[in-house]
Length: 103
Image (cartoon, rainbow, N blue to C red; front, side):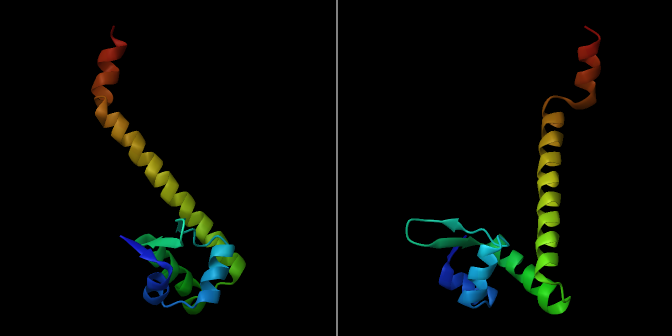
């Protein structure tokens, strides 16, 4: 599901200047169309996380950037691991490696 900027602002409970700052900081990276920016449900979850980090935990701007960068790395590693496991199972797993080494 995609959201317009106005829908996103309402759902994420953000004002326009805050959104612009978060985009400038690259904490949020919405998709762009010819007319406007487009946001996803994942962007809403990320905005809520940013708000929690700042408002509830008192994390400063530099800390938010570090936390988001680490989170992005973890998600990237999870995707890579899922691909490795998918390939591993697709080609028969350990049994294929064992039978292939006997030839």
